Image 1: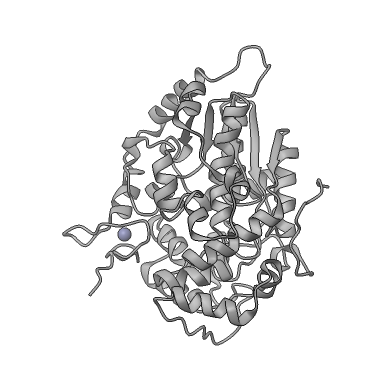
Image 2: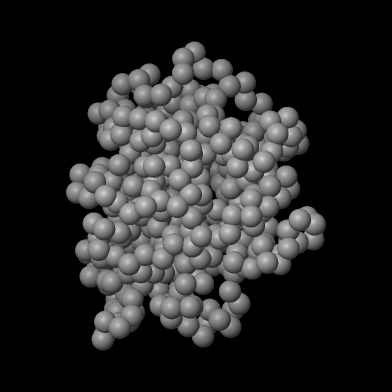
Length: 401
Ligand SMILES: [Zn+2]
C-alpha cells in the first residue's frame, strides 16, 4: 500500500517526488517546518546583499527581470522587488492564449499599479497549436508549450537585454515536496526546468517525434546555451528562500493593497492561484488526475494544513469534493486546437492511469459547500467565474482600464 504522510495528505506518488520518513512525515512537511525556525531578518539581509551588485548605477537599464502572469505569485514578487527592495524591474510575460478576462485585467493592473515596463511574448499561434497537439498526444499535456514558454522567455530576455538577475516567487520543489531545504537557497537551473517543469522533454525532442513540428516552431522555446548564460552571468533566485512564503496571506494583502482580483475556480477552493487561465484548474487539472491520481486541489489542501488553517480531516473532504468536479469549457480548447471530442477522448484514454468518475452531488460554482473557507480568506472578488459572462479566450488583451 502507498504511504501517506501523517501530517498532510501527500503520498509517495507525487509527480515531483516525495520521501516519507520513519515517523510517517513527508519531506514537504519537514521542509515546511523550517519556516518556523529560520531567522527571516537575517535572510532578508542576505537577499539585500545579493541584489546590491545588480542595481544599475546610472538608471540606464533594468535592475532585474520578473516573470509575471495575471495570477499566481506575480503581484507579491513585484511588490517585494519594487517596493521593498527598491529595484527597477522589467516584467516579462509569455502569452498562453487561454487568457480569461480576469487574467488580462490582473496583468494590466499589475504593470499600471507598480508602474513597470512589461514585455509580452506572443509566439505565432500556428506553432503553438501544433506544439500543443503534439505534446497532448505524446505526454497527455496540451499545457507543455505554456510551461516551456514561461520558463525560457525570462532567460532569453535576461540575455538579450543584458539584465542578469531574474527574480522568481515561490519554488515548487521546496514548497510542495521539500526537494530542497530553504538552507540550500536553490536557484534556477536548466536541469530542474527539463526534469520537472517540462516532464523530461526538451523542445528539440519533439522534432523527431512529430512530422508536423519543424525547427521554426520550437526555436523560441529552446533554452539558451551555457556560453550565452555565462557571458551575461544570468542567475535566477527564488524569494521563498528569503521571505516566509505564505501564498494565501500574500494574496489577501495584494487584493487589499493593489486590487488583485480573485474568482471561483472549477476544481479547487483556492480562489487566487490560477484565475488567469480557462483550463489550468479545469481540463488541465482533470488530465493531471487521470495521469497521476491527484489534482491541484491536493496541493492547495496540503499547503493549508501546513499553515494550520485547515484541519487534515476537512482538507481531505475538500480534496475529495473538488477532484470530482467535471471540467468546464473543454469546447474552447477543442475548437482552438481543431480536435474532435472523440479524438480527445481517445488521447485521454491513452494516458489515463487512474479513474475519475466525475460525480459530485451538486455543481460547484461558489464554494458554498464549505462555508468556513470564507473566514479563512478564500473570498472571490469577482462574482462571475473568471469575471466573464462570455466563454472565449482573450488572445491579446487591451490595456486596463
Ligand atoms: Zn506531509
